[in-house]
Image (cartoon, helix red, strand yellow):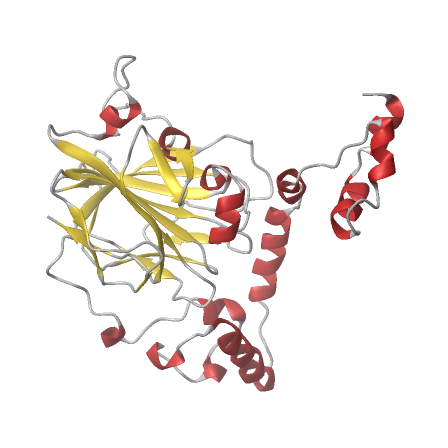
Length: 340
């Protein structure tokens, strides 16, 4: 490409290209200029910086008289059901962060005891089913690599993961029992949903892996647009075992959702100002003093998002495991996902 063309390949021109009527900047193509793709343009937006700024704004205490109109606008915009909240009085919430992380009344979400796996959160079912060829659907027809999403298996004295083998596929490293299959379920939490998430089954968490990354929107429209979106975004992978073998829950960050909190993990700090692209850090909950890890009961409080986001379950189960879901359906924490 010529030097004039290099100078013309700029973000301002690209933005104008998509805003102005079709063909308005066509003469520039004669000198070799081409617009940057919409995906590349979106990825250039400093979403991590914006999310940190949003997080600080959420911590600002609102004047007492302003709380009701601000929260009422949010409730009206996103369809929040405040009758389920443990505290319905809007004046109780000093800032937006407290309002987003509001607790529910104990009877608002009964936990299904008949099925082995329940929904860990409120949300919308995007995809579910068996994992095929180590690829997982983020939305219908758009996949991402399971290995890129979870990261390579690690074998140390403190971790329970089986060692990697050149002759074994990544899937075979996760499926620990003969005759089992690998399953997945993706749940999207909208801004109006209950923002806490819970344990989806009885299991033991042995390991946490934190991937710093982008904080792009994870709404279904964006998930169709950007391949491997979940692999680009910041996420926290909790992995361990349940009665049928491997089990993992991944909390995926999104724009304005840089804050992911795991209640039993005080060392976790998300949306840091600086990070190395493609890096991750590991923490084992299996120690000399605790050789089992962190036991979680079905329905137990596990963590929370600052706003809406996505939960991804990847787990091993026998071949006769059946999901009791439909793609696109709304679901609430405590309702059945599937069982044997």
